Length: 181
Image (cartoon, rainbow, N blue to C red; front, side, top):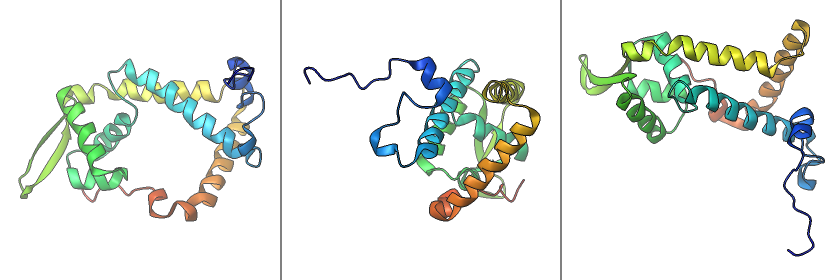
């Protein structure tokens, strides 16, 4: 690769402002909004990951905790279904959360073959931190936007999600809360 220009962006501040590193890759020039959405999603996940790390959580674990905070004890199978994730991913997340003392699993008294997942007191104590992380990232993400612009952005992103719904199929469904919720 002698004489070639390094394709890595050397202007991260400009990329953060514009959502692209100079020009988007040539293959993405036909989809500048899609390219920007992908970058925003990536940066959002990184920023949330940093905030969650301070709480001892990994990205995605807070979404599981939110379900449990809202539902109370729920069967592991229903939790898997409601999160719309692969069972092995949810099992790994639960193992980590259980090792940290945030959740506990126990047999369901109504069906000993089923496993109930519930939040511990330590897990309940995370709620304020998670709420603060989401609120803080919302403010950071939308800084400089007037309330009307924020509402319009939410409306427009909702339309984009609706447009993608058919393509996403079942994987794009907002998973329902478990029946026990």
